[in-house]
Image 1: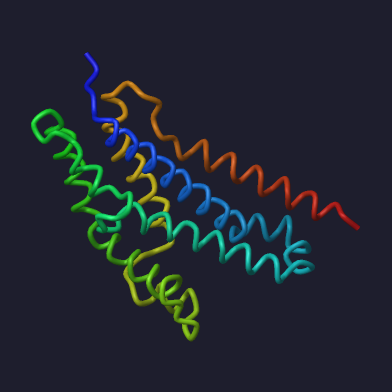
Image 2: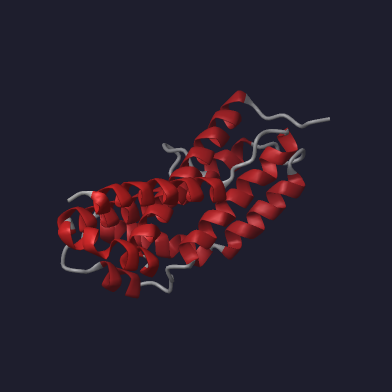
Length: 192
């Protein structure tokens, strides 16, 4: 027998899944623009559209950081993982809540670092610091971001699988995003 959650919890779960998809899509787009193979293949496009390249790359980075921040933000006025957890019946969802709690405990440092980056780079926009300088204020590495997105996926899928729903799949979102970005860059490359 599939377990159930309230409509409100279901709405929160759906919104959190959208946040995870947004984080995955933004991060993959950022990484596609930043990756060495893209520079080898599309370097001429990046140079001829440098203003667009810089702004777009930064926007995708910000989109990923904002999505990560939304997911973990402890604010009772927003959709976030903490509000969702409060909606689950502790008795019925005890094993999943224990696993989710363990994941969140392991992510404490990463969550703090994401808040620092979000605050400095977006919320309070410290224009005197570069993205690299902001990252240096944390122990976060670039590969921690996709690892955190995969952990967010796993957290939600623990509940979704018990409900019998369609699980969050960041790999397919990432692959689709990368293909769309490459298609756009190819069109720009082919222009005279």
